[in-house]
Image (cartoon, rainbow, N blue to C red; front, side, top):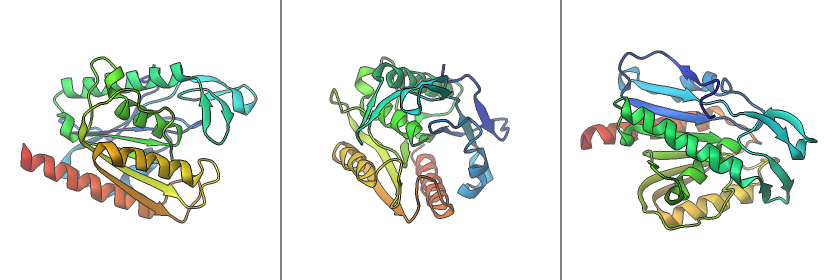
Length: 228
């Protein structure tokens, strides 16, 4: 389950916005907790951060070693051959966790999904293939970090109100640059807004990226307040 080992950053009595951030292959729910201060999000916006933990499972491309993984990767082609059922299960759990935040009083327009590498593939799948997930709900923005779209769009969904914010390293030697760009081009064609950002880095996040991500998030929360 996606909530096993769920971590949060900061304790807010009445949070008004929420970021659900999924880690990459082999990492843990703690991986991006230290990144939160570098987003520079004003405290008065009352943003809650949730960091779900992927289940531990054997990963074929890593000689079957068990590690935290949202889904098994069978081959690197470089397009990944994956266990589709694992990815779809993670996407369903992400929608379920998002519904729980809405039930707690946080509106969807103040919820954000972020995912790095494998975690990014999960948030992209949950968004672009929303139509195949019962009781699905979309956040305001998807932050797709150093990632790729693992499965094609199977059914048409209305994503005109959804924003995508892609970031990739120009020297990424794990998820090739072209795979990240292809994911951006896919969301650009079907969403309300899709942005593409590139930094001179490998398979990682950098300070400038976190600061830009935080500025965009702050602006989106401000826009939601004006609408509300």
